[in-house]
Length: 168
Image (cartoon, rainbow, N blue to C red; front, side, top):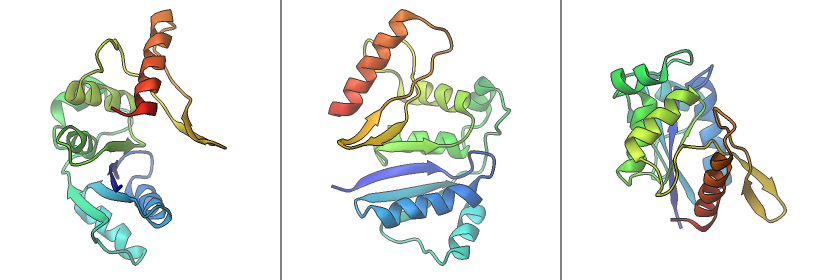
């Protein structure tokens, strides 16, 4: 089963210089993953060329004309940057063109954009941040972050983890 992932190539402190090689490593390591590299087309293509990689059936590029900066206010990024690499990557998930979005960019902006575009699972009040850590049985969603320490937040995280583990 082919899994398509949208990657915000402009996110993080170093943007496409780091995210494109990481995406290529994932594509080389897992034949069931296809990747949509999202961001400033010139920057992405320059990094692909530096590594002798080409766009093919498993790697594609989707241009986005804006970048969310690491220190940008999440609400401002959500409202003003509708063609940011982050927003376009999340939109690809919402439109069913990608199964997931990955970003190393502004966490607050990613959470705000994702909640606005994708909404929340029924019964979940706030988004959680999760990471996948390998263990002997595969991968496990283990990390989470809440702005405040609310007991009901932990129940939400458990529900999200269960949903992610079983799939939709």
